[in-house]
Image (cartoon, rainbow, N blue to C red; front, side, top):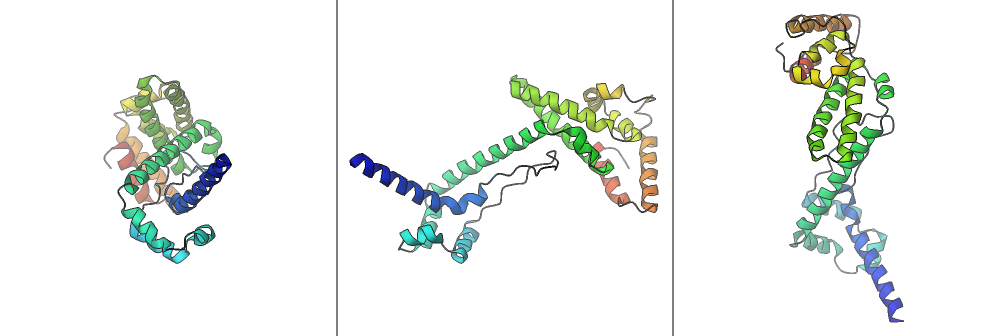
Length: 244
């Protein structure tokens, strides 16, 4: 009989605790890329938590049916005391950190599973350039992690190298030349570099390539394309650290 009572009490307090903590769920909820969207973007940040806004939101929504039936006292004051207690921030930070790590893991797995060629086929030229830059950034990060020699990091490096080359292959030839003018980037793209003919001295040709790229975008503006000159100028300046 005592065993049964203990089990009932355990379930009761577990349910009570779960429902009491449920309002914190939105601040700890992870997201994954939507189906068909690119995982080569930074995951969205978890919502910021502010105690006053949290309490005000609870006051407007109410405690919910479960807590209202079981908490006859001032339930809102109970939340305030919980927030002001010595253990809340430590608990919240631990849960928050775990959620952030879980989200990074989910987005990393999405990058491992994505069909890069199918994804690139749906992108505009500007989106392809942006994706190339992000893939390169993730690859360099994984290469740092792969120094530990874990199978997961090594597999991620191989996948991202293939994705980087696939993204590179669909860029305009003049943009490929511009990218390869960076020696470190050229090392990452050795396989792709062999596919680009007539490179010559890409470093000395950088100014000409940029000018050609400018004219190309300007012609598109005249023909009614949606890209404007200023975003492209900023793109080249920020991404490739070359003078405009």
